[in-house]
Image (cartoon, rainbow, N blue to C red; front, side, top):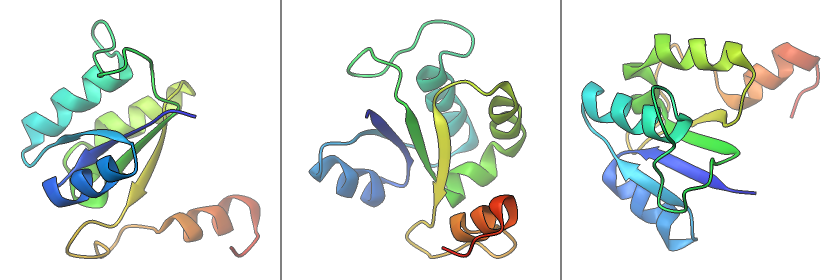
Length: 110
């Protein structure tokens, strides 16, 4: 399964060590540009492998900058599936964790 990550430099570098491609993004414009390239929104998919990833990993800080676009994409039901992870500064207050979302959706505690 193909993965791709967008987030802070250190997080992206850590994922690259295990073979996951990614893009460093600090500003909203950088995050949105990377998101559009990975999802193919507005044109052709432009990731290093040329293949649409099945899972797009966003740090919570990156995701908070493009919330509307992320929600809109998730409603399409297309790949990539978007997963948020905490960034370097930890969990963002007010954001649901993956475990909380799963518990809400299926009623099972992970």
